[in-house]
Amino acid sequence: MINMSNIENKTDVILIGAGIMSATLGTLLKELAPEWNITVFEKLDKPGEESSHEMNNAGTGHAALCELNYTVEKPDGTLDIKKAINVNEQFQVSKQFWAYLVKNKLIRNPQDFIMPLPHISMVQGEKDVAFLKKRFEALSKVPLFKGMEYSDDPSTLMEWIPLIVKDRTSTEPIAATKADTGTDVNFGNLTRMLFDHLKNKNVKINYNHGVKDVKRSSDGLWDLKVKNQATGAVEHHKAKFVFIGGGGGSLHLLQKSGIPEGRHIGGFPVSGIFMVCNNPEVIEKHHAKVYGKAKVGAPPMSVPHLDTRYIDNKKSLLFGPFAGFSPKFLKTGSNLDLITSVKPDNLLTMLAAGVKEMALTKYLIQQVMLTKEQRMEELREFIPNAKSEDWDLVVAGQRVQVIKDTEAGGKGTLQFGTEVITAADGSIAALLGASPGASTAVHVMLEVIKKCFPEHMLEWEPKIKDMIPSFGLSLMENPELLEKINASSGEALGLIEKKAKVEKELVLN
Image (cartoon, rainbow, N blue to C red; front, side, top):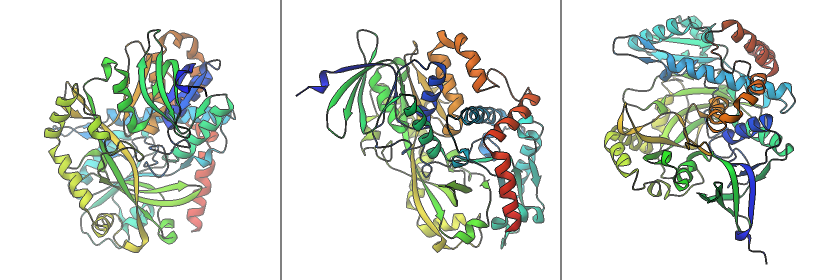
């Protein structure tokens, strides 16, 4: 019998995890260096089953059109809109790349992963209405947010969000902004499409293969110990470059790599629970993603939203998220994940975070203890006449928020965002964190390519500009280019045509 543990397999690039990030990086590299050999390892039996799955994430094309936490009110009353601009620019990059893939027939049927959908911010109470108006005035001057509308008129709001406005008895003022350029993105479907494409490009994709260890070998290559979960055999695979895109599982593998950049970093897992509507009549009365404002003291991840979603080409309606807690770093992870992620180098960082984040701990405990009826009461702040029998609870994906020492926040600061940790020599990179994640995957993976393959950038830049015309430019500072790109990507992705069709159906209904 052959001892598989002694067999060495060499390749140029190894991608760990078959989610949207690995799918995006693999697709970009196959366009830039088609001759390179790429191998993928995924511990589950198919792609896009963890954080990328359509029922495990919000499905919003995060473009800061409706997410109020991307615009921060400063102590002097002015608004900081830098993050909103950055997130929007990054989503524009994703749309350009997807349009390139469709135009070149590398993926087909864009309606299976992206649909046009209004993005709406809705607030209640005088203070929040004043904030929303200020936000609208700041963003509407920026070309990226062109066409955004504001209203506090009940009849207009009844047109925009009838399910929310109807039967509302509260006397508090209510206002909303609407952006018709928003989208709903099915990242699960997109991930599966990209892996089908990669398979056709001779990328070796290994499902049911778990990476157990990542070590630097004496020849400078990365040596991965991989277990075939179907047979139990252990194999060794070597590569010049490794990308760890295993969602919550990335932190453990980053720690095993031993790179200094991975020290003093911890992770805190948070699970999400959504309420899913099972009544087709209710689903048909709502057509938008509506984001509210997080309650005072609640973390950014808790921003309530009522979302129309397109899953398997069928319209659905979700409300949430409610936070849950599990020590697992993946839905399919281990209950020991959190404990085993604490190492001597990050112990003080984790302890400092524990002391600083008592409010978050209290919030999570309160959320876990909620009954279905208490969750329904929160939903009724959005839909006043919501009936309990029309809604089911669904557990979403696990998110691992990054904890690290920062100059601004000090020791043990909890990060709300997406982070890439890269070795100094660019030979290994790991993706950690959460939202806006998937929506900015193309931008994030281009950053990985720039950091890890600087010697190729001069040669690759023309091809990158072919795929992403705005590469190296600010769309905010080039409104004409923005309009041109919006028109071409909107046409390639069928967004303009689909928008007209959906609007016609809504009028008929």
